[in-house]
Amino acid sequence: MASVSSPRPDRRREELREFLRTRRARLAPADVGMPDVGRRRTPGLRREEVAVLAGVGVSWYTWLEQGRDIKVSGDVLDAISRALRLGEAERAHLYLLAGLNPPVAEAAPAIPVTPGLQRILEAWSPRPGYVRDRYWNFLAINDSAREVFGYGDTDHNCLVSFFTNVRYRALHAEWAAAAPGVVGRFRADAARYPDDPGFDRLIGDLLAASPEFAELWARHEVGGESQVRKAIRHPEAGDLVFESTLLPLPDRPGHNLILHNPLPGTLERLERHMASISLSRAS
Image 1 (tube, rainbow, N blue to C red):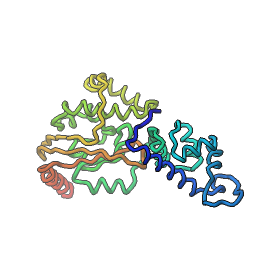
Image 2: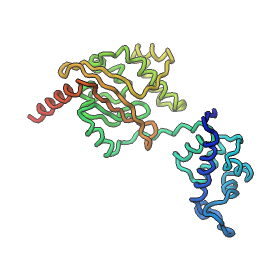
Image 3: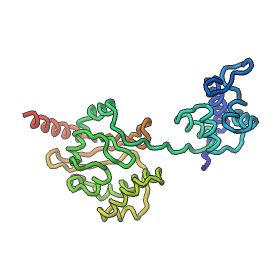
Image 4: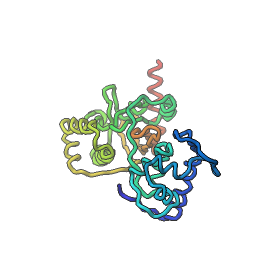
């Protein structure tokens, strides 16, 4: 695993020393199935106990905790993480302090969004918003996104809809200019899960269904912008322009909240249009 540079190695080593010390201090021998032998001057596990639990030498672990310039590997850091009962965020932090790139978090399976997340989407209305999983499947979408972007009951995947939904394509004023960036961002996402056959199936289906996607996919371009511009030419609401921002959901690796913020002038037209729809439905 490639090392990452640190502008201030002394501070990083100091933080590594204190991080490991405090993780040891919060554990009692009984917490890890070890006997509590002898009087302890400080609370928590001893360094030699952590070394035994992790299967590393006592001297090596001592040097690591002292912040010395020694070689470390992901396998050893994982063993120390298990010994110290570290959570995923703490494990990633240990990797960074030790000078390694953290492993990619395993994507969570697609599960229904929480009521709290659903309330965020509803409160964001009349601005469009939705939640998608690692395959870009829609998990939740508000009424404004359906109305403004032309998503219907058969639209289940953001990428598939971009290339195969005729209404969406007609509404998107800058479709051709946006398409390379869409494919580039999806390629970057797919690269995080090289062994996931779900991406192969999705890509294969789109290659067969869309010549435009096939041409762009063959370019092997990669893009990772989290904020993009989306211009819509709506037949009733008029011209609508949004900044689309992607917000990762830390408690659900691979899931993202996508919020579209209207640029000046768009919000007023959007509010009038969504209000007229609400009135027509109520009458």
